[in-house]
Image (cartoon, rainbow, N blue to C red; front, side):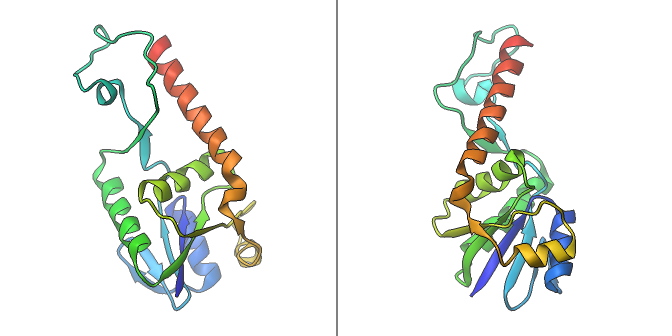
Length: 176
């Protein structure tokens, strides 16, 4: 069985690949006997826009203000590279030889939210550990891979990330 490491961005994935000696290159990921290392491109998801919530085409002139959705929802960005990489991640998450996911977003609330959104969107219910990297040196990566914690311990950081995203959206839509 292998661990799937999902890094926040390609540069971080490359640092992990080098630190853990993961040499086999594929389209959108790297692999060896122990690890599959892939990546997001930062935010693959964004909050839905007003039209997504109402089901109608909304212009700035016709927007019902203030607009506050009953429940916020994310959607995959409409960018070909983002869609392709998400499909790669989804297939990796669904592989039967993946025993757990290693969450490797940046060590902040945004990094937490980015990878949590991918995991949630894919409806993954298995084990998720958090690889917390205060710095991205090879030495730190090798050290921290042996000190991972359950991703549930970072739930408050995820909620902070969501709250910040919701507030930015609300202010942008209603006060712009």
